[in-house]
Amino acid sequence: MATLGGSTPDSGGDDQKSYTMPFAVVTGLFFMWGFTTCMNDILIPYLKGVFDLNHTQAMFVQFSFFGAYFVGSLLYFLVSTRSGDPIGRMGYRNGIVAGLLLSALGTALFYPAAELVSYGFFLAALFVLGLGFTLLQIAANPYVAILGSERTASSRLNLAQGFNSFGTTIAPLIGGFLIFRYFAGADVVGADSVKVPYLVFAGMFLLMALVMRVAHLPEFTGSRSVERGAGALRHRHTLFGMLAIFMYVGAEVSIGSIMISFLGLKEIAGLEPADASTYVSFYWGGLMIGRFLGAISLSNVRTARKNAIMTAIPVVAFLVIFYLQGWQIAQNYGIFLVLSLAGFFIGRSLAARTLMVFALTSALLLLAALLTTGSVAMWTVIGIGLFNSIMWSNIFTLAIAGLGKDTSQASSLLVMAIVGGAILPVLQGAAADSFGVHASFIVPLGAYLYIAWYGWRGYAAGSPKNETQTQE
Image (cartoon, rainbow, N blue to C red):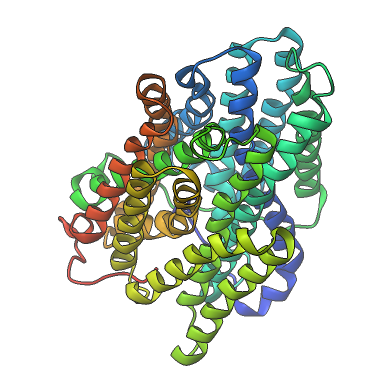
C-alpha cells in the first residue's frame, strides 16, 4: 500500500538487468502479503460464526490487524527521530527478512488459537501478523524502488503493487473455498478450518525469508538520519492528508469486511458466505484493474496510444469476466469499468482532480446502495473497488508535496494513519448492530466525502506547492 521515504542509493540503468531476479522475488512477497491481508474478510464471518459474535465484536479482527500498523509505525517513528532510520542502518533486505519472520510467527499462532478455540488468541495472532506487515511495508517498498534506475522506479512499484492487488483479488475465492468448504467438513463447530491454511502461510513466509537470506540479492543501506523533532506536523496539507489516509484505508477495509454479511441479506442477494466470497473478489479486483490503469496514465506514451491502451484494459477485463462468469455478471460489472475509465479521462492524470472525482463517485455509489436493494445495491458496493484503486497513491503524493527535509517523517506519519483500517470497521460494525448491515454504509460514505474535499481544497492548504498538482 505505502511507499516510505528513505535512502535510495543510485542504481544506474546499466545494472537494471541484474535486478530482474530479485525484483521477481520481492514481487512474490507483495502478492503474498496482499493475499494474506484480504483473508481477513473471510476470517470475519468465519470467526463470527464460531464464537457467536455480533458485528462489532467480529470487526475486532481488523482492529487488531490494522491497529498493529499504528503501534509498529509509531514505535519505528520514535526510534527514527532519536537514533536515525533503523532499516537504513541494517539494510532493506535484512528488514524484509525480519518482517517475514514476524509474519510467519503471526500466521503460525493461528494453530494454537484454533486448538484453544480462543478469540483473544486469534486477535493476538493477527496483531503479531500486522506488526510483521508493518515492517514489510517500511522495508519492501524502498527496496523495490532502488532495484534499478531511478527513472523506472515508479513503474516497478506500480507493477509490484498490481501483484499485491492480484493477491487480494483471488484470496476471497481460494480462502472462501478452503475455510468454508474444503476444511470445514460436516462438523463446522470449532475453529479447525483455519489451521492448515495458516500453517501453509507460515511455511511460505519462512520460505521467502530463506530465499531473501541465501539468494544472491543486492543489499542497500542508508546513511541519512530522520530529522529530529516533528517538523512534518507543521504542514496543514500533511495533517489533512493523514486524516485522508485514515478515511481511505478505513472505508476500503470496512466495505470489504462487511460485504459477505451484506450480500447474505435477503433483500440484497441472500448468498451463503462461500458464494458471497466470490463477489468480494470483484471488489478487490477493482483495485488491481484501477492500478494498472493508473500506471498507464503515468507513462510517457503519446496521448493517442495511451488512451488506446487504457481503453483496452477494461475491455480485456470485461472479456475475462464474461468467459469465467457469464454475460450477466460481466454486464453488471462492465458498467463500473466504463465509469472508472471515464473518471481517469476526467481527472486528466492530475492527482488532486482524479482523487476528487473518484471519491465523489464512491460516495454516490454508496448513497445509491443505501437507497436501493437487490442487485443495484449489491453491484454499487462491489463497484467501489475500482474507484479505491488510486486513492492511496494520490493522497500520499499530495500530502508530502514540497516537504523537503520533512518528507521521510511525513511518510512515517502517513503510514501510522493506516490505523483507520482498525477504527472505521469497528464503527461500521457498531452501526450494523444498531441500525442493520444495510444502513451501516453511512460510515464509509462520510469518509469518501472527506477524501473528496481533500482532493478539492484540503491538499493545497498550507502546501509549499499549492499552485501546482503532482501527477498520479
